[in-house]
Length: 96
Length: 157
Image 1 (cartoon, each protein chain N blue to C red):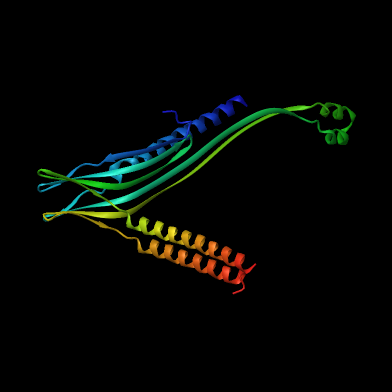
Image 2 (cartoon, rainbow over the protein chains, first blue to last red):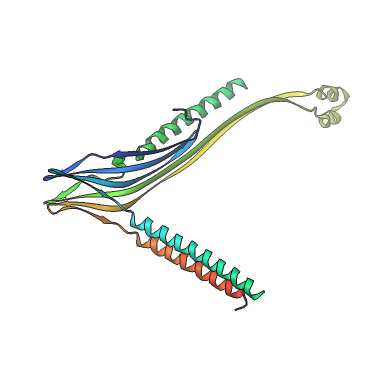
């Protein structure tokens, strides 16, 4: 790989399966890797676990509740700002 | 000068190599094993912690050198006589080299969920960072209040 050029990768992977009784759990993760000539950045997060029982396979996603709530608050805030601005514009236009 | 410049360049190259090695080690966090903890078993229960891992590193090095002429020092000549002044009127030659480098990095891990394997099945319980959410809520409420009060002031209400 040419390290002089910035390189962006989005790679998924699975960890070692864990077996407990009849259940085998395989955790999956996803990593964002950004590399440049003099450094880099890695963001790795869990995405799901694959649960295998005799005759049954199930994929259970892992949600990052903290991040979901944070983004929801940000989206609410942005929506309120836009709404307030539109209302204010309308109001000032009506006053003229 | 060439010798000292070569030494500096060699030292910089070595440092860069070490930084690259460090970076390669940091890149190990991209492996799934860094996200999931080792399974802990207690009785019929097995618990695995899932975390979000972030790491970053940046470094840089630079070396430089050069040769050049410097103007003759006439002051010295004036003080010590005509002959010496002539001598010092000659331009001199000098050379220099230098190098430097620096870098910085950081790493962060935050638990996201706890996976519990029990005879009843597999359960995923989210881990909520209350401090982070409290701060986000505080900032959101603050920005909305600020916007609202500013609009009221501007519209003369």
